[in-house]
Image (cartoon, rainbow, N blue to C red):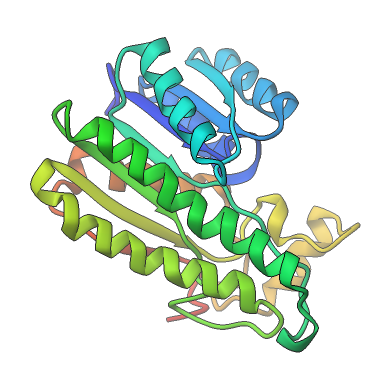
Length: 251
């Protein structure tokens, strides 16, 4: 129960890594606020947390809107009285294709959600944390970006590479405020973003078995375990770290 008495905010909490980390935080005693654009998906996450015996609530928010982000943080504090940990996980993946065929609208959307959304979330989370004794932030980056490149993902790789750098910049800016900022950089995992359209879980597993040195796709529990470690006191000396979890792809 490493997070007993703690309040945790998870963006992109309606599916995949966000849902898994929300459940994991709640199982270890945290009160969890899940945020995202899909009210129905957030409701499902809250129900899953409740079925696990945990505490969670939801707030609909678009992380590309500063007004939404400010309201998201304010609602977390209003509901639970504090904000100790944030997992900035909201993200989108552009359809693969060469840079010359990438339309400007897709480019802006991918950078707005994956990069500006992390910036705005940290801005408002840190503003609260530094006035209330500090805290811990974990951003979701990717093994595509600062750690490795994949053809067809220029927008996504650019945004996630910048998240890795933004994490380090924020960590140095605010370590003196008692706030630790770190990142996780997952590779292909059980979340929906790693599946091709219409692909089954079994087909995805077979496809990645030959692409990942470890011979299998990552689990959501493996990613959430890394997030929780970075957010916990066990990682108290980890500042500005970017933990790659990709089965050896970028080793």
